[in-house]
Length: 140
Image (cartoon, rainbow, N blue to C red; front, side, top):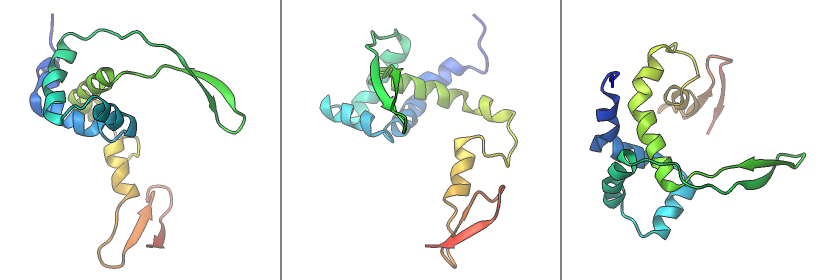
């Protein structure tokens, strides 16, 4: 099997798994699952290696939600904690490949977007929102 930039090694590295866990913990649902399982961060990082190596799709039960103002019924499938962490590991390993073809000043990637949304000046406490579109500012 041919490897592209050794992505598998990057995916299973401990630093990538630890970073993926910190990114996944931004989700309230992920933190709630970890608390329910009484799982520490170190235990989740150790087990994530087994989850990546022995990955299998879990059995999912569709969840029905009513979305938006019109209350349109939608069917969604909620991923498990293991699947979420594996997805974060894979995306973090492939991030340089995703960013390689993107324009530096575009707002198409999350790492670039947060700079524009949360750019707080130390002098006058002004936040600039979407400078590429229009330089609106307001005071905090």
